[in-house]
Length: 427
Image 1 (cartoon, one colour):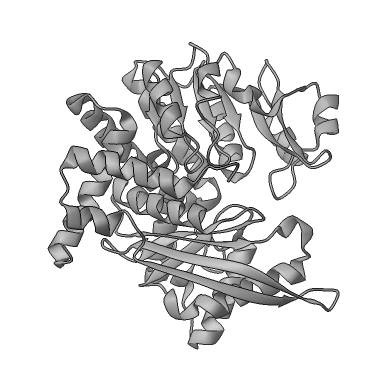
Image 2 (cartoon, rainbow, N blue to C red):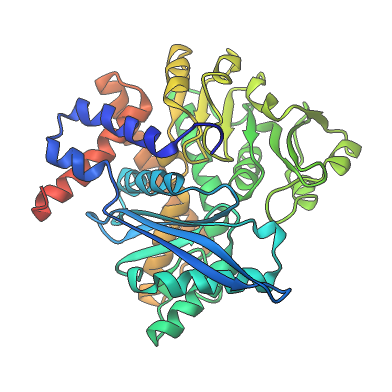
C-alpha cells in the first residue's frame, strides 16, 4: 500500500505470465483476470462522542466457479479497493491450489480499529453486514477474519446477518470463537500451515526443521504460531520484525540464541504490536525494521503485509537462505521474484504457504453444516495432510516442468479454475 505499488496490477501480471504458459484462450483470460463482482458502500457509524463518522467499505468476489467465494475482511487505515481486488484474486488461486471447493473473495473497511472503542467497532461490524447481507451467505460468499479483525468481529457480523436473514446460519462467516460455531485449531491454522510447507520443502532437501534457523517478519497471529511450531519442531527463530506500540514504528527484535515466543506474546497487544522497552529489557537487540531480511538463517517468513520483499530489499538476502515461505499475502514483487530465482532459493508462494487458514475455515464450514465438531488433533491432522499434499503436488510440477515454485502453484490453481469455468459453460 506504499508509494505507487498497486497489488492488483501485480496480481494481474502474475496471472498473465502463467496464462501465457498455459495457453489459455482469450475469453478465459478476460474472465479470470478481473473480479466477477464488486461492492463499494459507505457505513455511517455513531461514535461514542455522539458524532456520526462515515467509513468506506468494500467486498470483492473474484470467482465462484469452484464454489462460494471465500475470503477475509480487513480493517486498515490504508485499505484500498485495489488491495481488496488483489487479495480476492489470490484467494481464488489459494482455494484452488489446496483443492477445496471454494472460490475467492475479500472485504475491507478503511478504518483504524486501534483508535476505536469496542462499542464503535461493533457498530462498524454490524453496519458492514447491513450493507452486504444480500450479497453474502453460506452458499454464496463466506467472509472470515483478516488484518486487524478477529473472532469477536466475526461473531458480531454473524449475529447481524442472522438478525437480517431471520435464522441461524453459522456457516455464513468463519473464524468465529469456539463454542459459537468456531473450529478448534483455527487460531493456529495459518501459521502452522506455513511451517508444514517449510517442513516438506526441507524434507525434499534431505533436511529437517530441527537445527534450522528462521527470521520472521510480523508478529500477529500467523507469525506467532509459525514461530511456535517451528521452535516446537526443533528450529530456532532469531528475529521477528513488527510494529512497536510505543514509538508507532516498526523494528526488528533479535535474539541470536532464539526468541521466546511466549514472552513476546505476553508483551504484544491484540494487533500484533510489541512493547519495545520491555523487549530491550529482556535482552533483545532492537534493529531497523527491514533487518529481518538480512539475517544469516535458512528460512525467511514474510508474515506481515504485501510489498515487503522488493527489488530494493531482496538483494540483501544472505546466501544461507534456502527457503522463503510467504505467510503474508503478496509480500514479494515480480522484480524481487527474479532476484530470488537467481539466488536459487525455494519460494513457497503465498497462496500455498498461507492456505492453512482458508483450509481450516473450510473445515469450520463443514462442521457448521454437519452441526458436529472435530477435536483439535483431528483438525490439525487433516490440515497437515491437506497442506503437505498440496505442497508436494506443486513441488513435483516445478521439478517436472523446471519452473519456479510460484509459477507451478499458479499453473495448478489457474488450470483448475479455468476447467470449472469451461465445464459450467461460461467460456
